[in-house]
Length: 199
Image 1 (cartoon, rainbow, N blue to C red):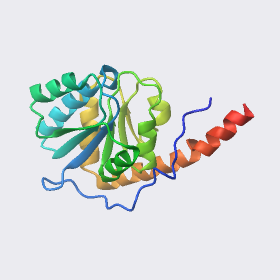
Image 2 (tube, one colour):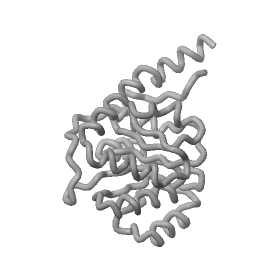
Image 3 (cartoon, rainbow, N blue to C red):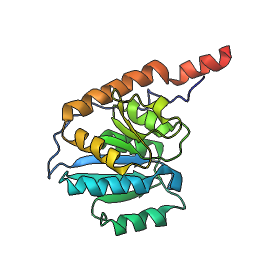
């Protein structure tokens, strides 16, 4: 097995202060990916509606574009989340890195997924990940170590983990640091090239 790999030198976080979540400084949630049905954005939005119902302050930014924008925008409207959810459109590599630098958690609610390089990049940026168990994601994120892996199509499970991270800045920092260590150990481009050459 030769897994995907990323440039961990480029996706290297700048020093950041892990802030407590308050009304003035909400939990910053980021998703990165094409706007299509299999990315599970409806599940993500349902989870965030519940998170708001729990009184957790948050903002949700979605980086990506695609034919499913209308459907996701309509779901945002129906769930009354227009003041909490922002569509960023298609971003450059550097813009994605900056978004990850400013975020507190990466949310990936996919119902079908190969492996997802954006999830690897987030971990390299010391960003804890909340994702589903779709396909290759459990190989990508170490559950309880670099983030949380929950059943797909389970907004309640997503809400539970987001709420946990919102209330524990030390946990966010610990998971994020473990994520970068894991990327450096297992998912670097040079190691991938060596494995292909040996193969």
